[in-house]
Image (cartoon, rainbow, N blue to C red; front, side, top):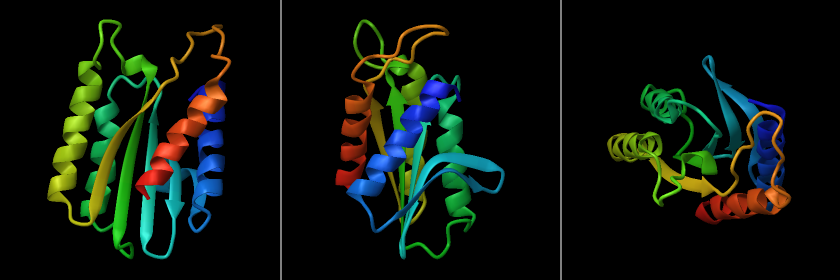
Amino acid sequence: MGEFAEEVRDRLRNVLAERRPLLDWQTEYRIRRTPVDVVGTGQNRFVAVELEWRRADPANNTAKLFYYADEDEMDGYDEVVVCQLFSGYYDLESGGVSSKREVAEFVGRTAAESVERVEFHPLGLPIDPPKRGGERPEDWRARTDEAADEIASLL
């Protein structure tokens, strides 16, 4: 993850902590060897947020989380919520989303149907990650806050 992506991730965690203070919010939370970008844990709830910035295979992150949930890595939680947050990198100029995002969403929805107590929510993060040396959008903080608000509304 680059510096800008880390700042977005950290802001996302901070806003979620404000909006849902009953959960303990952390970044780079490890499940086995897999780091999850943002995780909120509470008495009976586990919330995982994967920030898909420019990943070539975003389906892999979601598949691993559902694999771990099915293998009892998240026992002790009555509810597991997986949110996959896709940057504008996955949006097509002609409209719609890339096949990478479509496949990741399919994997997430299919896994959620087969793994008890787990929900899946694919969401958009309207930030186009700048290429190396490119400028950040001026309103990236507001856009990150909007994404955090959307996630918080699901909880």
